[in-house]
Image (tube, rainbow, N blue to C red; front, side):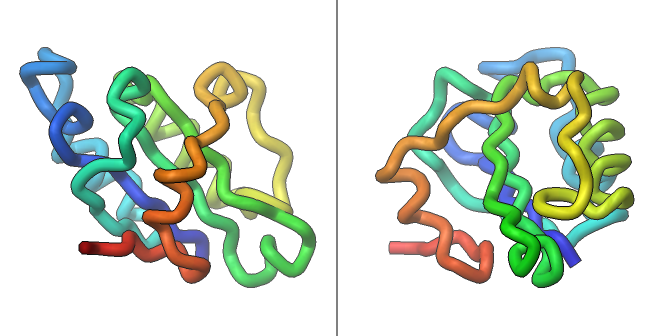
Length: 123
């Protein structure tokens, strides 16, 4: 099963930063298709809301790597992510073009905050 890390720190998940968006509904939608982990901050606030899709074990064995998605601020984006994960996700299914618009390279400091299993590192 794929894992998803959702940033919900100082900016991501904030109606102050991204008003008129149901942040809780986004997490619920993603939790329908993958294990969702919440982290406080991934230090990429300019990309709020940030979602990191981790490959399943089969996807990792096939060469899949985590995919960082930024500006995930529309309900349709969560649907697109869910559809991609149902198809196999990183390493097993091609990234839909519409999600390609959200992809960015997570900063090294933020990548270290997610351990190899896809869990947020605290502390």
